[in-house]
Picture 1 (cartoon, protein in one colour):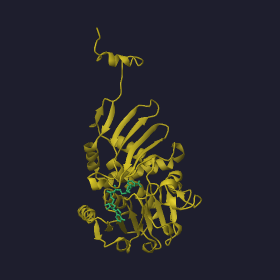
Picture 2 (cartoon, helix red, strand yellow; picture 1 turned 90 degrees about the horizontal axis):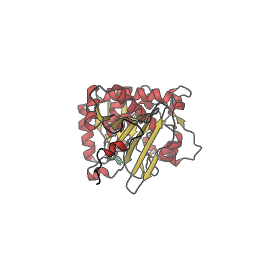
Picture 3 (spheres, helix red, strand yellow; picture 1 turned 180 degrees about the vertical axis):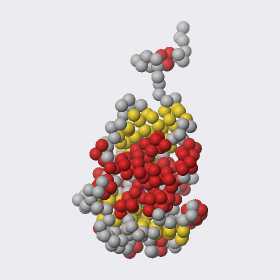
Picture 4 (cartoon, rainbow, N blue to C red; picture 1 turned 90 degrees about the vertical axis):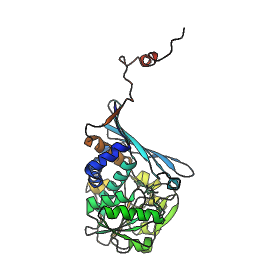
Length: 341
Ligand code: NAD
């Protein structure tokens, strides 16, 4: 039997402890797995690009457990009443190859992305950071805000989105969560006085959501919306002024903001900072960028954490055959096959 976490079960699992606590739990799981970096089988995700979006498969294993996530990215979807990003994933036992858990991963991706962003900011943002600008207030935005409050205590937000309805939605949701919220009149206004800037916009384009004039010394930029070839958010000159941190360099070179830079432009993988092999932020004036694209180990950690913290009340799916004789798979068919005279 395979444990199944469907949309309703995932929503209940999040509500049981609250999204903030779940994000903190996933962040701890990701951090623990990043420390074990060499144990993991790593490769850039497999991406199938089409005119309006991308479908991706994200596998990894630590030798004991294997995980794979199916996820899409279709920025035009909200215009037809659909999510930009949906996903589901599988956690399996490497020893037998049998799947253990199948889970919805749309909400779980939002939690794990927020967990990764906040975990990175813990090492990269200034310690006295209190205010964050959130640019792009769609599906990911509230989760991002909760992640930064859970791990860094950030409670002051300025918001900007080109869609007034998305802006009003985020303002309503975030105020009801107890955040101090200022609705900005544009991206430049949103970044005014911000210590951290999160860009989580969706556009299948080389967009310039953040220009150089909006970026001041000491800022930390958490750029999560540039995550595909030809889909970025930052003016390239910002990258040249900043220290850049990535998840897994071979994947980010193809998909992240750094696709605009030469292959030899220096970047630091985050696990090295977590393991204290290299410093994160080096000075109060440094501009740091987390060039986030989303990496398979984060999904692995999230699925592992979900499985470890589920109570007994989980549905099982009869997905795996178990004939009495393992070599007699046909016995299952013979029972139901019509008898031909
Ligand atoms: P969404 O479509 O729900 O929200 C995106 C918002 O960005 C929309 O409200 C849109 O109006 C706004 N927007 C677009 N262009 C803008 C601009 N120039 N200025 C201001 N706002 C703008 O999408 P989502 O699910 O919230 O995802 C946001 C982005 O994050 C997507 O690009 C997605 O691919 C990416 N993402 C990255 C990761 C990661 O791990 N790095 C994980 C999940 C999603």
